[in-house]
Length: 179
Image (cartoon, rainbow, N blue to C red; front, side):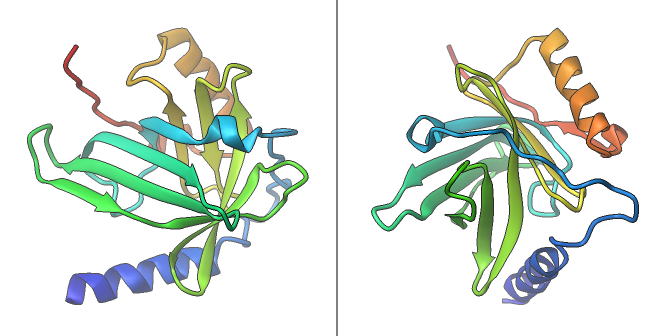
């Protein structure tokens, strides 16, 4: 029960501070448009600046499904601390805040707070994406498969650094899948 209370407090603070940016950081642009139906589905978390929930995550996958009411059912699953660690699952809800682009979301872990999520990179084939936050505290590099090419990863890191992030905080998420 205490862990749930701590999680609630931390996620609430995350949501409350989502509009704040470091002094001097320019506004963060999103991609021009996201075909929301194409964006739905499974995304392997390749790397991130992890929240406390994500620390030690292995085989992390973020899955999105569009609900009839326009919200986004989200399922985040991972193994804790090892490939054979206990499987964890979280179910935040996404809300599209800018329907002209579909690239600016609120992600609700705890009612009524919605954390800032921005789709700032999206490959034309919808194979790789980057989700960032205006505050530049957390970022996620995700792909449709468990790996991306090294050159593409370095290109994305340079892009994220250009947004004002400290890329030294970005950590690879271990991914190992049969087949």
